[in-house]
Length: 253
Image (cartoon, rainbow, N blue to C red; front, side, top):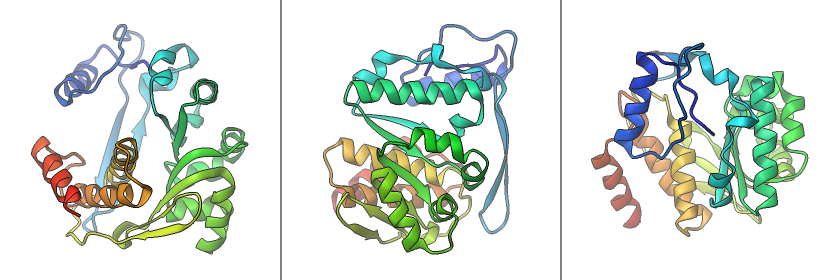
């Protein structure tokens, strides 16, 4: 997707951060009519967080902001359920999936938030009417999707909408499904300070693992290792040195 940033300090800060991290992006121009989206994160002493998000100019993203060329040359396209919350971004998510399917690009999705599964269930079903290749969710999102308190029932339901998936359980590790059987991924014990970004780090590290040719169990170990490192930080980002340390530890497993 094309970046949507307001012509303001937050937009310039965000773009500069992307450049420093070496992230490829497409930005035609800053938007003068809208402001950059922001998110207020409130962290409690138990390391849990509450998010108060303002989408800003991001709410105007649409099919016109899709970069088909970037999708076509990818192994996976990754979308978050947050995209279905507005009509323009929901239409964009549908279009992204269509482009991916036409070009044999695998689709990965993150359920993002348990509340979305209740409020926007019909839109999610539209995207998931045919199984996607990879789904990420935490235990509460898995249970909410099926409206059950039984994780085994939730797992059986997820198998109908995703060929492979990963369910995270916070400090208790994760379960990953490789299309045939479930695998338990043991947690890495750390002192959690801030759980912000743990799910995003898990998904990113997992995708890195499988796109490097690793099997789903090995990718799951890297994802748990990286997520554990993030929650033991005060901020939801790892330095380049920390990233290299995690990769070295993972390669020695």
